[in-house]
Length: 236
Image (cartoon, rainbow, N blue to C red; front, top):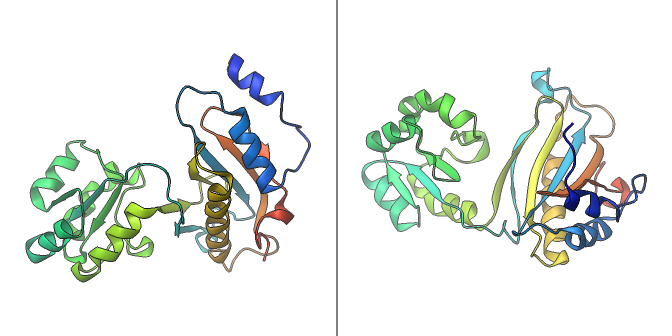
């Protein structure tokens, strides 16, 4: 591990290493100790009891955060004909089919969410290596492969605070909750919505408590351990 910077060390001094903090305490502490020169992102890291080596224990889903993420979300929609017109009128930032697919294939990724119609997925499949690494590949399970009549809802959700979460190879889910500049109650409500959605996504193959540990951190800050019993319905 590389040497920690002065700002990180100064922030870490305020955190009791073995203490399990309530969500409110942890959020207040994260805000107080944030000393970067930019508006850091507040992140939640959940270690689960899932085994990612088994298909029936994989976790992936979508959560809607009531207060969003504090950033402008750029939405790209792969669609043609009337679908393209609907996507444009619904507020999509980028809309197209073959030409847009070619542009992405060449490495252009200046967007945050990609949505597509089912009929174009055959063409989009060749973008798997490009979009898959960034978690941007449209997928019916996450509500990003929809019929044109559903573009309005899908685009609105994406721009308002729709986030995708998934289990990594170490059985941890990493998700943003908002910005340090958010009021504590806003971050807390985002956390509750996210945790409830993750818990509802517990695979049937996972026995016992689903969440093993939970930590809160900021982009440049140290981890703050959360008291699982104080997170809404965390082990239901």
